[in-house]
Length: 457
Ligand SMILES: Cc1cc2nc3c(=O)[nH]c(=O)nc-3n(C[C@H](O)[C@H](O)[C@H](O)COP(=O)(O)OP(=O)(O)OC[C@H]3O[C@@H](n4cnc5c(N)ncnc54)[C@H](O)[C@@H]3O)c2cc1C
Image (tube, rainbow, N blue to C red; front, side, top):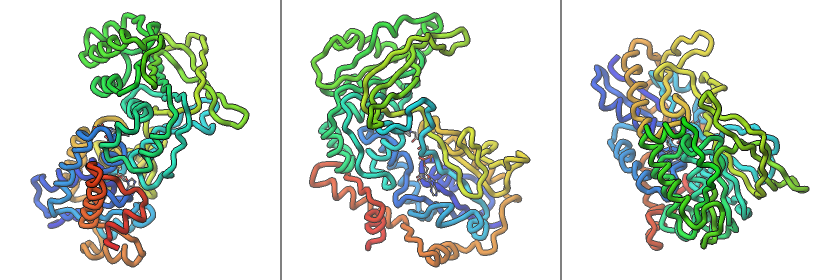
């Protein structure tokens, strides 16, 4: 083998890091990499997940762009695996494939009423405010009182975006329609619910602290949630992150708005702990009207149990931020329970035999599940690439591995793919749209427009 023709499906951080690591790995063969991405823009959830008011994290794009610009990778944007190109096609033209398709769906929350009008998944809302081309452009922000379910950083992003005044988001890259939507929002109260206590949250300290810095928003925490059990006290004493989180929350207990005693701000952000979702009630028109939860308490196994005490909060919208979930890919093994491609250290496994499927690999969130930061996808990619390189004898033997063959195939199928030059054109176009308004960029949202700008049409 003198050359590895590799397809990578998914141009998020996992796919781009995998390409970078492979190119830098010591090896006895040449490499030629084609990166397929269903969207006309690369970077996955860094562009379409990370919140627009987190420019430092969005800045990771600079490092990812350097990899793409290194000249060793071809990008095929607006090409969807399973529709525009299939596993059989890849076997004809490549020696192997790495799937890095991430996770974009919401995990289900099984409570009565969850499908009511006014009940939303966090992933859909994130896609909307980050300008994802495949979600509707209008988002019904008509609720004064909103519930957010979840105690992780995605719940914090949702909460912040709902509570923050739209004008404070103007310096970011939010699309125009998102600014207009948020500006018209009548929201006054955002209630965040977690099943466990303040010492068990999955928030990170920096992101939690940020909530308390929002202009014209009062933080509301409740004394009843801070009657710590021994396990919580031990966690606070032994874990620096938990200690800082507790310190942040304790500081909010001293603010005028604590216990909902009435602060000065026009918006309030309530954190409710020890609250297990029970039911979403609706009005006569089938619209969300209140959220019922059960108070919980710690149990002997380090978890929680219900106390039997039910409470009800009137709301007009609910967002569940209880996790993301991967999607199956045609022809590729899939673990329905965990929402991942079954694999051993990135080698995709046959679901019946549990043996590696030759030539097929996975990395990132579709390999490991939707937890962890962007940086984790780098170590993921290292592991996967190590197996890919070691498995050289097991790769596919394609009938036409030439670089032109794939271009011909896409052209023959009438796929309007975009390439790296096209992405540069779109990138510059967005930056130019932002310039007159002193904004870093304004995102183009409609897919057609993205493709037209990219292709110079
Ligand atoms: C709301 C939110 C906020 C976050 N904020 C942060 C943060 O502040 N800091 C941080 O470090 N991490 C953050 N993360 C986590 C971070 O986004 C992930 O760790 C990382 O993006 C996972 O990378 P990935 O490449 O596996 O998946 P993704 O980033 O999802 O990339 C997958 C890519 O595959 C493409 N794809 C999917 N299916 C197909 C197909 N059939 N054909 C072709 N292409 C396909 C997708 O379009 C996408 O571009 C956040 C995540 C979310 C959801």
